[in-house]
Structure formats: structure tokens, C-alpha cells
Image (cartoon, rainbow, N blue to C red; front, side, top):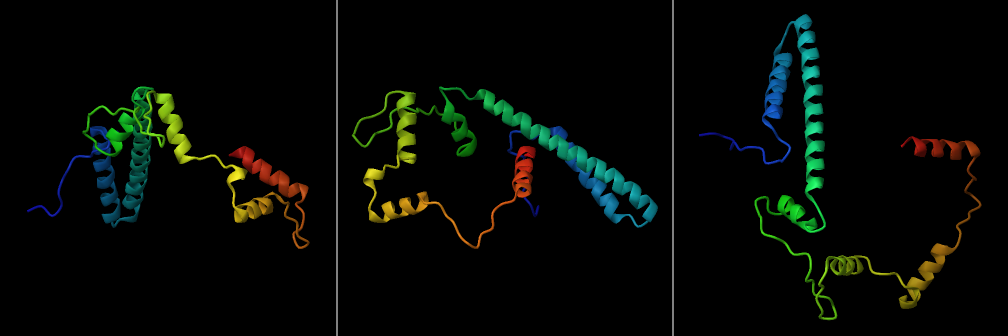
Length: 170
């Protein structure tokens, strides 16, 4: 009786080449770890590090290519279909309609633009000052006032230039 259930990899970027490279990497790691001769061990270590670098590069390339292919399959008609298919039900192939969301006014949306606007309005409502209570008004006023303290030293030109150089580098 097997102690671990074997199954195929269900990620879209997995391939047999990656599987073979993984087996080769694990074998070279075991060979390196079990070797007692220091001279041969160093050779096995270098070989293992080369295999590990190649394997990690293969994984990165495969994931990037898979993501790019996924983005190419999305268009305006099926924006959520692929996300739902890959995220919630991997094998689910039913068409998902994006229109027809019921609004608070008991109307339903009839186009993609109306649906997107309704979802955005519900998720990110507008922040109107007219609807604020006293606590919110005081909080907003405190946020708009400039903070100044006697104990806080001013920034030097070197500090500002250092932060700007780090920001430009990233």
C-alpha cells in the first residue's frame, strides 16, 4: 500500500521536461549529500548547483510563458470566464454572463459597461463630505492640517537625494 497518493501536477505550466529536470536535480542533490570524499563531494556540489540553477530558470520561464498565454486568451467577452475556470472550477466550461446584475433600484444591467460601473460603484463608493457625521468631519479636518513638531528635525538635502536615488533605481 503506498503511503503517499501519487497524482499528476495540475498546474498549467508543468511539463515532462520540468519533471525530468526535477528528478535529475533531486538525484544530484542526494548524490552530493551522501558523498563522503571531500574532493568528489565538491564536484557533485558544483553539478548540483548547476542543475538547480537550470531547474529554477526552467520553472520561471514556464510560469511566465503560461501567464502570457493566459492573458492572450482573455478578451472583452470572457473577462471572468478564464478566472473562474482556473480559480474556482478547473474543469468547469459553462459560459458565464457578465451582464444582468440586479441593481439596488431593482433594475438589471444590460451591457458590460453598466455591469462594470455598478460593481465599481458598489466596491468603491464615492467619499462625499456632505454625508459625513461630526466625527468624520473632525477626522477629515485633522488629516488636512499640516503636522509640525518641535522635536522632529528637518530632512537634509543628502537624505532627500538618497531616497530619490533609491526610488529611481527601483
